[in-house]
Image 1 (cartoon, rainbow, N blue to C red):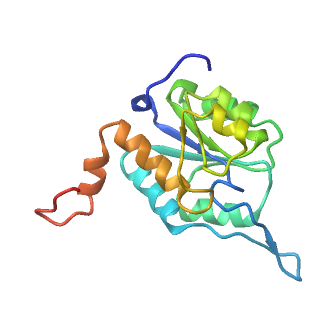
Image 2 (image 1 turned 180 degrees about the vertical axis):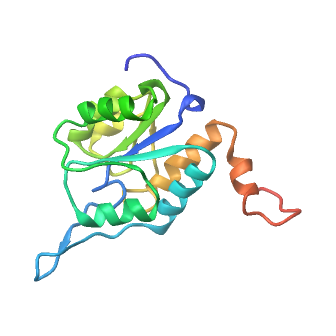
Image 3 (image 1 turned 60 degrees about the vertical axis):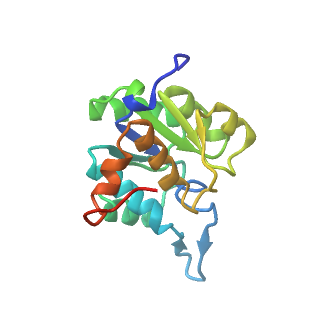
Length: 179
């Protein structure tokens, strides 16, 4: 998208997995079982985003049962794995979800995410993303993928939407003062 979209318009957050929700490492044991490490704050951020009415989706190039398990745990309904063309997958997702590209943000880390980032209203990148991906992003996290970058991106969106106090208020004890 060539037009600049305000973060306040964002309702759908599309996530890559390897290098975004994880640090990009893939552990394969002697039996061929794949394991990934997910950051708990990223999961908390996704659930917070959903609790405040946002939607989350996963579009990833690889296929993994681990991703299916994590998505189910986080109640992410739209999960597209083994995707060769992420922009095409986004178009299908938008058609199914009733959302528009203008109200969608996506977070990526590598070159195969560039078509997806170009197709959404608000592109995001993790701190350790490829330089081309960082240049394509409206916001680049200070945290690397798999180390709280998703949580940081969600906080960025909620702050831009003027909803961060509402998020804090869900958990803060009475009389809590924000710093």
